[in-house]
Figure 1 (cartoon, rainbow over the protein chains, first blue to last red):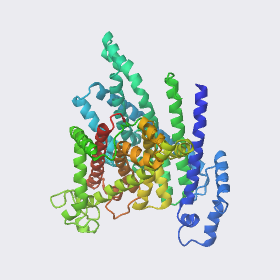
Figure 2 (figure 1 turned 90 degrees about the vertical axis):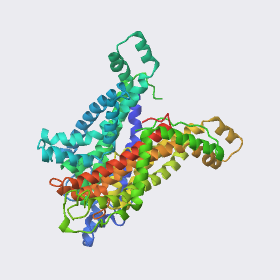
Figure 3 (figure 1 turned 120 degrees about the vertical axis):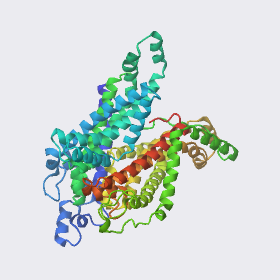
Figure 4 (figure 1 turned 60 degrees about the vertical axis):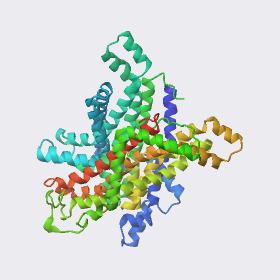
Length: 307
Length: 298
């Protein structure tokens, strides 16, 4: 188990290095002169030169990357061009935690709703309940979350006045963004749970349990569900990534001051070091979450041999 | 969202008689799959709307007329008008072209690159396989829309760059699916036999591997168009894609955001349009998967 965890950890290292390379190269993919683009057309030459110097754009590429990575290893994500302050401070003081909170609540909602709906669908296969659940899931899967957010604001915040339409922190500000972000994941998890349950229920050992006279309830919840959850767990890990990406849109709709809104504001202001830093932080977080999911998966299913 | 295995049935290529029988049996099975059929019909209807739709409305999709601003849906304006007095129905009809084009073009580009990489990876294996799979791992490490977002942020915000960004975003998924399918086909005995008879790699790949892996590619492409449309409209909603007054649906939602409190129809219809189109692709994709690839699971 420990050996597996270490090996799995080592496997993620090249991925993280790859992510840093891509993020680093983003600055160099800017068409034309990056420093000029950042500061805008018509800026004085000295200012452009100053930006170029500050960003180290005059150094040879490998040296720039080396400086970038050694900065990262010391927790230095660079400075924001707008505020001139270290990006790490701006991110980790509150923005990062807001997005993490939003993503975790949404994941909980998605997992709970998705698994529940998936079980109902599988157990009552081909019933109106199944068809209804699967139609809602298809709808949830096909809906742009930013639009769902706008509709929820319209109905529950404006018309009914139940929740606050923007911001983050209080209960009444949390509900709508979490529903907005969690729905798509719930739909995917519901579909996965259903198909996985149906497959397990069709297997011999479930038939044996039935033949032995084990009660249906126990068959479903103790025997089938446990094994059906194996592929679902992987999907949950992957969906967490979808949620981190979706958070960008959700935060924009609800004016939540997290990483997503930060990255959008920075793109508009051409504050590229911030764009790089937020993309990097969210991606590394996604990689680490998947690592944790894989390891816990292994832990709960000791008989699975990954090699 | 990973496709675990792909069904690989050896099939005779170049034999038109067999092909025809296969098509007939495919169509027969597809017809039994109601959801897929509806998805397909719907898609056809949307393509027709995209092609001839703009001829059917009398309004200009971009002309500003404040005398008709923010009208509720009525017989004259089916979906009402927006804050610039433009007919929303007309704008949605024009937007259909953009939405479908962005979806199809970006997925075709993404699939082309993904298929080439996936075949190299699966067929040649070894160093190439390791390298390509590491690259896809890295690309998939960027959560959701973030890779596309980053690409658009550096290239500049317009619809063309959104297509590039969404194409790049689609490459790793195709590369993985195609690699898996290629591996499965390559292991078949008759491929081994061909190789020992001295058939060239090119002949094996184009004559035998590619025809055998078209099913998973088509299924993946259909489902991927749904994702591409959602991603592209999301980027436009964030102001990074199509710019006003382009009647792109995501941009319409962004553009009308400040008016929806009192005029919900401004946001309702563009959003519903996205949902309907994406549902059609998802239905068709799910159905095609059931028909073409019984073993492929979501």
